[in-house]
Structures are given as structure tokens and as C-alpha cells.
Length: 275
Length: 227
Image 1 (cartoon, one colour):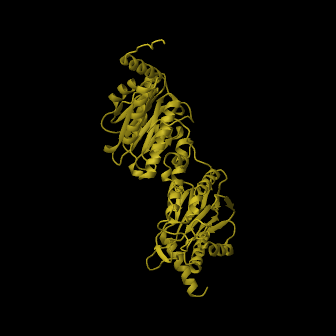
Image 2: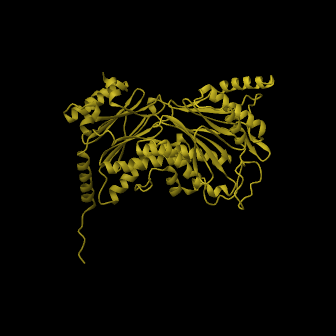
Image 3: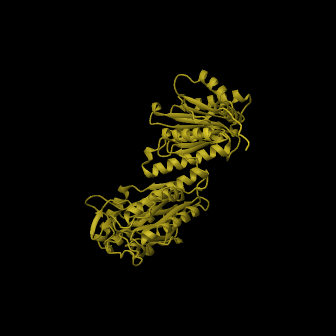
């Protein structure tokens, strides 16, 4: 450990890029895409920007106490199911979480770097980044991943945070160039994102209760799974359900799998009866 | 060409050590103490924003006495070292031992190679899963490293604190309340004055917490503890 002159700033991502560029997602020399592919279809390496379509549905919905963020569990590899228990919603710090669509490996890596990034900043500076600051930093990291997008390794997140200064939940969406856009009520991305958005649009209103927001989210994921092959619905045989987290003043709360299971049982029952 | 003056290595080291000791002696003191459920750190520090005690990683804390700019650089270097290691391998692979070794190397190299030695003394503490696995390292300006048990003190009045605590720290680790009271008493004793709780920086590595075990204790909370 040399004595570091303080020219790295407070960013772990920048530090990593300078000290160990081989460990960043956009590491040079990484030219072929191993493992999980995001859309399951040929994404045309090198010649053009691949279609931003991913075998996933993740969404975020605002409610009274903050934001609810949820995602399905399916990972695909071509036309095969690569995983049934993928976790796509990540706790980032005490007041923020992100859900990701794209190539599994780089997605998980980005979530991990981002977690370290925020903790690193907090420890070095003695204070947390603001909600806005966190969202911007994530945008820069996505921008840095742009070279990988041309290899077919897209990483696209939804980022949600509870803004302690404004006392409200916030939702941010991104494009592959790192462009950052704030959503006022809800958003959903991934191959089933549009289907989920349509469902949320029908049922959303301001100031949903926690229970209502959860119902809307689960219904949206269910509908997306019906329409989109890349999205997994509730797996009643194995007992695998989409995951959801609440981001509020109290911190990040995982929603109990049993609670989600019960809500799905009721939803499916209602569908059977034709409701 | 004028000949450079000859200074014997012994003399040079002695001068450097004296210089560093003088710098450290001007500063205030810090105590780290094992208590029943973790490690407590108390610093005589009237500033509420310029910290002397800091979190490094999940179960590791750092404190520095002496020149602020110098131990602040060491602190940052430690956080970078820990975060990089934790990211590259796994969170459980970040240890106080490796960090203390790094600090020892850095301080030792600077002491022998640079004209001006660092005027700092630092403490690296790690709370273990049980009392036996706690680690407490004191690292001196010349890179010498001491593996302490029970308690450790650094800063201007470190020796007086050691003497005071040695007599009173007995029968295994005290409760947090007793440990805090003992640390405050020790600092008041060596400074010969009553220290207001607002003028103390207090933090713990609490074994009972999950994940990041470092926590600062506010003056309000410490007042409740000592009441």
C-alpha cells in the first residue's frame, strides 16, 4: 500500500479505473460475450447498436411512504431458461435500490461496484451522497459501459432512492449512453417492460398505500410474464415468486416471499373466476 | 564542489524520531478499549466535523493522532485498500492485520527514506466474532507495530494513559458503560481538566450489528450512558 497522494477523489469507480482497469466492467481486451445474453436473440456484434430489449421485467412504483421496486426472476440464454431464481433487485445502500435489465454478468457487477462506490464515498467524505448525486454517478457508470454495449453487453437499470432532504421517493431511468431521466410516478424496463407499464398505467393513482402498490406491481409482472417469453411469472410448482423491496424513510425492506405468494394466489384465483 | 555534510545514520534516525515525537506530543490523545460487545474508541477532539476516528470497513475502525493532514491521508489510503480488496475478493477477506501491515510498511518506508517523518500514531481495531478474536494494533511514526490487548492509547499523553488504564483495566472487558466511564476518567486524569462530552469523539465497533459494525455515539447518547 503506497502512500496515496489524494488525487483519486472520493469515487471508488474512478479509483478502480485508474488502479485496476482490468477489474472494471468495460475492461479492455474483453471482446466476446460469455454466458447469459440479454435478449436471447442475435444482437449483431460490432456493427450496430443492438436493440435495447432484455429478457426481464423490472419496475418501480411510487406509494405513500416511498417507492416499491420489483422484478421477475427469469434469466434466459437464447431460447433456453438459464435461471429461475435470478435476483434482479439489489439493495444499494440504506436508502436506495436498483433493478437491472441486460446481460446478467455485467449487471450484477455494476450493482456491486455501485454498492461499493456509495459506501466508499460515505466513508471518505464522512457524509452520504445526495439522492441526486447517487443517480448522477450511476449515469456516469452506465456511460463508461458504452463500449460493452457494442459487444451486446447492455446494462440498464432503474434506480430508486428515498431522498432524505425532500422526504420523498424518487425514480430514475437511464439510456445506454448514461442519460438520466427522472420519472414522476412509475416506470418499468426490460423485454416485458412495456406490458408491465400498460398494466401499471391502468391501476396507478397518486398516494397508493403500500398494499395497493404491491398489488399493482405484482399484477403488472404477472401480465408481463403472460405476454413476454423473457419474463418469468410466479412459479407455483417450485414456489419461486418475483421479488420486491420497499424504499422508504425507514430504509430498505424486503417484502416477504410468503406475502407475495398469498397475493398471487388471490390474483390467480380471481383470474380463474374470470374477474 | 562543496562536500555534503556527513551525518551518521544513528544521528539521523535519532533526530527524525525526536522530531516526530515532538509533533505527536503536541496533540491530544485517543483511547481504544475492548468492551464486552465490541471495541470502543474515545478521542479528545473538540471538533464536531474533523474526525479522528473513522470507519474503514465492516468490522474495522481507524484512529489517528498527531498531524491531521498526515493521518487523514493514511485513513483514506486505508479505506481504498479495504474497499478494493473487498471488491476484488470478498468482504470477509478484508482484515485489520493486512491493513496494519500496510500502514506499518508505509510509515516505515517514509521514516527511513524521506527527510521529514510523519508525525502520526495510529490505531487499527477490528471487532471479532468473539472477544478472543478482537484485534487491536498500534502503529508508531517509524512503522513499528504493536499488537495490543484490552486497551491501547495514542497521542500526546499516551504513556500516562497507559499507566492509568493498566491499573484500572482488570477482570476482563467491562460493559460499554463502564468502559466509556473509564476512558473519560483516563482522559480527564491526564489532561487535568473536566472534559465536556461535547468535546469527545466517541465511536464503537459493535459486535451485535449486522454488516457495518461501526457506529458513532453522539454526546446526547453518551450522556444517557453515563447518567
